[in-house]
Length: 408
Image (cartoon, rainbow, N blue to C red):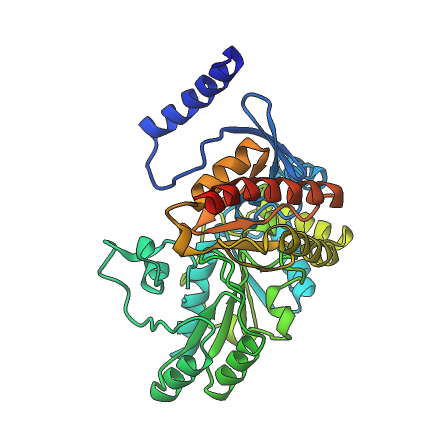
């Protein structure tokens, strides 16, 4: 083994061992230790550069350390960082006007993490009705999940959540017709964690029609799919659907700060009164300033149109380069949220985790989901030549695995 290679392994292992010994084991990261990021690239602790094709689960749509967003964060941090909601702050006032105009909704309720925003939406739906599938890991989110990793050993669950299969209009129709007490339907326009599942074109319009007919609120979880990621400002825009509530997070800060939000109408939002819901950090000045700049970058740099165009290039190159392989079941996605699905029948020969390790060695970072699916979601600022370079890396790595399958 070359001396330099040994040093690389030892350097990685120091950090991985520290985290393994002192941290909770609630994630299974790819064995790479990152130290720096810029645009569509990240560097590990040894200085090796990688193309980032995960973007922190689509939180870094605007690219790592976007200079405008960094500057906004620093400027606000030097001025006023936190007031709590016990007092008004000028930046929150400006943010509420900015974001509601940006998306065309009456009101916003700012929070911190995406799952907090999802929980907020559920509370709003229930408040409105009286008087979600993968959306996080709070108890309400676990109660609404069909992912065993999310709900196993977390019971008893919060009652009142009915699960219907994704992309199944008939199941939703039957549920709404059989139960007049359904208050809202919570859905990802494209399922992210489930493997970039793109619904039939009829699905969301039919869901919107059913919800309207049965006086049920439609809530779209755009935490991972929104903010230009799929080639539209909001993913539901692909189908001309306007939700009653929109949940935002991740790229709302360009990856610089925890920021999330729920957008809705006066009728729904004003059902919550003072003292009934809140967060010490929700709507803090840094978050509000960063979010305004992150949204401005999306608009000013044309990231919606860019994601749409480059996504077509990406899927086209992969279809041409690997679509014929017997173990590649499907290449799917919209914009720059894409996935390659590996055929389960070849699982003994090709594991998605091993493909991700090989991609890492070739200079590209991606992550598998559900054992046989590999997600590809680069920052939307990625230059086209870098995207094409990434396609070549992916194709060459897949060819190396294809040789094993064919030769087996």
